[in-house]
Image 1 (tube, rainbow, N blue to C red):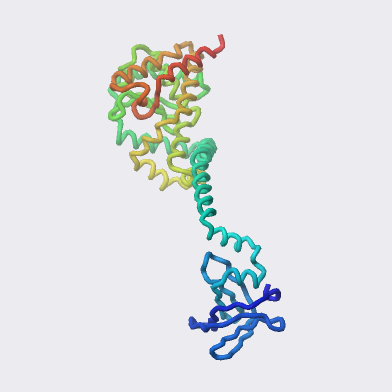
Image 2 (cartoon, rainbow, N blue to C red):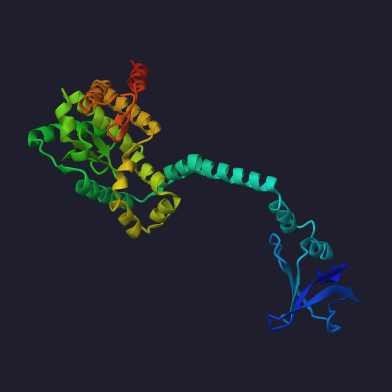
Amino acid sequence: MAAGFEGKLEGRYFVPESSFSHPASLEMRDGSLVVTIPETGQTHMPEFAELGDRLGNVPRKILFEDGSVFECPDNDAVDRAFHRELSFFSRMSRWEASWKFIVFACLATVAVVFGLYRYGLPVAANLAAWATPSGVVATIDRSTLDTVDRLVFKPSNLDEDEQERYRSVFAKLRSAAGLGDGDTRLLFRDGGKLGANAVALPGGTVILTDQLAQLAKHDDEIAGVLAHEIGHVTGRHSLRQVYRALGIGFMVAVILGDTSQLLDNIVSQLALLDTLSYSRKFENEADGTSVMIMNETGRNPLAFMDLIDRVFEEAGVENEQSGWLSTHPGNRERREEVIRRIDELPQ
């Protein structure tokens, strides 16, 4: 590189092992680089070692084998002297000095970050949910249950006969969905802060609250809700929501087996309940699964919508303005979508 040096550079020369510098010039003479210090008339012919990278308006450093350094404030002149004016870093430095490029780079960065969050993170979460080892999923499920039991739920007051009846209904629904005993289970809790509700935890545990059971007028209403939650289980919606909420670093660590501290983060956060609040897409998928399972078991696929309406009425909120309390976003079009799915069932 030094053999192609052309021209003359003005700057400062730092002697080896010293922070003291002299005003100096650098040029090529008889095939060698020569440093001239005008104030003393001395010349040095150090062996070229390396040309420092260009960084904004920071003076450029030319390094020599003996440890001496020549520093030039004119980056463009250095690029010309070393024939680096067409290099990537030289061009990048010029772009960095352009406000148009800075504006473009900022907008591009925002677009990329938004794209990753809007599209990349859901895709990564979906893949991670299916790649997570079953043992890790079970641990997350237990941790989540411990958290909601400690912070939200209370022991169920439903009598054992009623619980057993719902377990029997759940077993038939689970079987129709192609799941076994080890894939999902049904638990009962007093809803506490959550009230009339049902939730599916990341590992397949489904919780039905006393308050929701008390609002039901017949078993088909509860069956439809349970089938809906089974839809969340088969779609691994809860685990996907956890990954979306906690980010790529969390999902990578869990898949690779580093779960101790990460699981502590889950169980220590009341914000965990937000991970049980599903997207509209997940809710539609679960509704579709509910319709298919209910039809398969000979039950009324639309019955659970009557129960949902009753939940809204009991809570004193408008169906189209709120969610099924905190975990089931609903709107007035939801019933129409369920009816559409029922109409599409084979006769």
